[in-house]
Length: 413
Ligand SMILES: *Cc1c(COP(=O)(O)O)cnc(C)c1O
Image 1 (tube, rainbow, N blue to C red):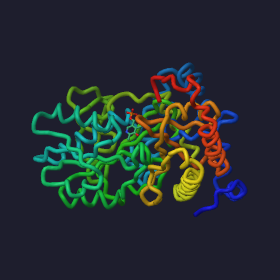
Image 2 (image 1 turned 60 degrees about the horizontal axis):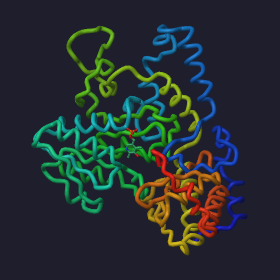
Image 3 (image 1 turned 135 degrees about the vertical axis):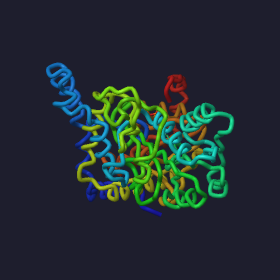
Image 4 (image 1 turned 90 degrees about the vertical axis):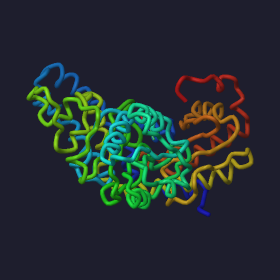
């Protein structure tokens, strides 16, 4: 058992090699933000950068900024900045579109690279958009194609001669269960399937070795642990062996070899830019670009060590103080198979979470009965975790959540 007293937490904070990173974020006073796994907070420098893009690059320099401010290369420049966080080479990652759209592109490209095989394999309970996009893709590809979902424990056995691509989310969005990327990728390859990973809950949170894992494709989210802001662009990774051969069906002009030649026939770029579709969203992309500076000098191993320690503390405190209210930890205790958030399952989770948010502790609720708490080492300390559980215990103890105002639901939970 790890210590769970306040003095120990303060000692951990005093010795924390990442403590100085908290100052890189502009967090509201009095908030303990445990939802960086859903929307990262505002890093300092982002507002200034966006202001510069609007007031200088757009207002003054107008269309010249495509060249003078190098707007045109934002997709590869931001991709190159994300690459070291996911264990990829700068030439293998490009910023593009949304995660949903990128899922469609990589799965379609994988099916095309693996002709004769007509099944996309995933798991039930994967993030909805992953399954929805695959349903849309297989429906579009025709009656031969189908999406098959099997529980995570059975995926290895389910990969067969008809599996074109295995598409999995590396860290599960509810439970935080984490796959062994290399082992699963090897299983897919042994059976002739390609492997595509959704890194939405992994990028910027856990160390990744995309290139050495052998993964064929990956996609990930810009607004979660990468802190790019609401609706920030996402990214795509392509393994070297597919960089010149992968074909995705959304063949827009930014994926063309020479977009400004304005020729009639599509000819894909012979690098990762073939995953692009249209004009990059310059303002949002610039915000993401500036946000990534929050990772400067903070290596993923150090981030991971602290993330695991914060998660361990939260799990221990929850067991100690919340079990008597029937609250259970559903996230694996073993850090080898755990991402960077922890979910609790219990009654009245929605109202309890609203009461918690009202007290300055922000997590989120996932239907039907999970409360999620994200642990983001760049701006959270051990005492924050201690206080969060203390306040949660108080809300359960006093039944403050029973106030009807905590039961009114917004459109986004
Ligand atoms: C957050 C998340 C997405 C988000 O997709 P959008 O296209 O940005 O809405 C996709 N997949 C997973 C696993 C996620 O966690």
